[in-house]
Length: 266
Image (cartoon, rainbow, N blue to C red; front, side, top):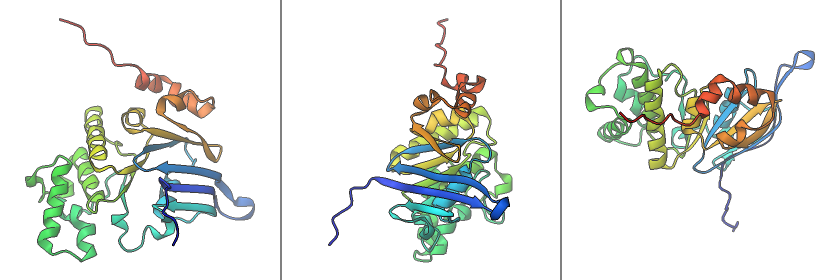
């Protein structure tokens, strides 16, 4: 019998190469990229345009095969992640929600559980209603259609759908895109609360520094076709590299890292 594993990595990427095209027209996006994501982390992937952040998410999901190297998710080859029962292993929050426009809110949330076909309809409905309320929506929202929802509500429904099967891993692509500052703050607070409650490991792609500082326990910077550094947001902000300096130390970065202004006494 093999000894029990003590590996705490939820995602392990080793020697990853991603090449599009062939011959003289080939474009290398990733070259010998390595990354580990530990259980319970909230890791943010950042990088300039064309550094392959979303490609990496798709490879973790098993939707794309790397040209070379190994991607392991939850101890299994990532290519097995998108097979039967995928929603019980990994949830995906897409940038614009990607709700089914012909389904109401409850049917969107229940979709993966209903498709599994192992539970009676009333239990599927009950489970979906629990998730609906877990993301801060009310029972009366269950019958609304996606076209009648605000941007913030769409994000919440999409999050509930991603969590319907209680997956141990959640991937988020620009989770606060399209939200105003107040809506973004509320959604980040919800994600933090759920992560603490569920213990789910999260990997996020974001361009928004406020979201990054609100959610990420660790940041991985993609540049020069690989992960050039990882660390807490504050640690990474001081790494010497042109992209890091532009991203973290520009006006938006300084504002995101500034300590809160103390309230004046009246």
